[in-house]
Image 1 (cartoon, rainbow, N blue to C red):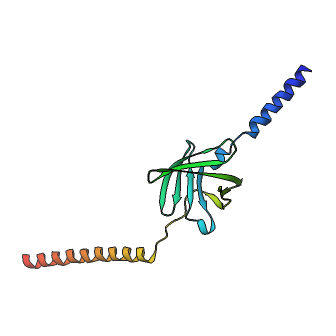
Image 2 (image 1 turned 180 degrees about the horizontal axis):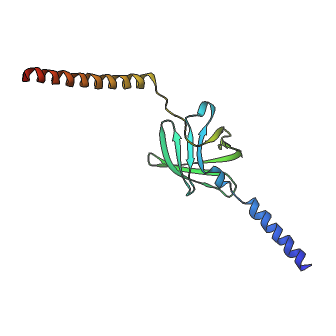
Image 3 (image 1 turned 90 degrees about the vertical axis):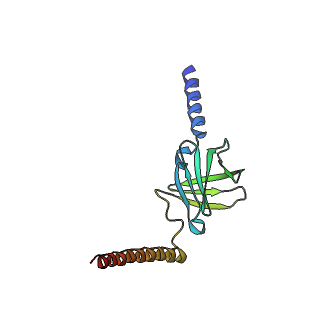
Length: 153
C-alpha cells in the first residue's frame, strides 16, 4: 500500500509539473506577422530579452510568461514603460497573439525577416541619382587627366 501511495504521489507530481510548463522554448526566435500586419515582428531571445518591430522602429524590451500562461512583453518607448500581455496559441511554426482587447495577430516563425521596407520609387530614384553623380564625377576626373596630358606636351 505505501508503494501505491508513493507511486500515485509521484505521478501527480509529474503531471502537475508538466502542466505548469511554459512554452518558453517555442517562443524563442523570429516571428513576423502575416497578412496586413506583416510589418510587425518580434524576436524573442533565450535570456528573456526581446526586440519588437513597430512601424519602422525596433524597440528593445523583455518578455516572460506569467503564472496564468499569458505572455508579457515590456518595453520603454520615449522614456515611458509599456507592457502588453497576450494569450498565445502555438500551431507548429505559427503563433496567434490575442491582446487584452481580443484582437488577434497571426505570426509566422521565420529564419530571417523578409524585407520590411521594400524599395519605394523615391528610394530607387535616389539610388539612380547617386549612381549618376558617381558616373559624372568619374567622367570629370577622366577629362581632367586628358587635359593634364595635353598640357604636358
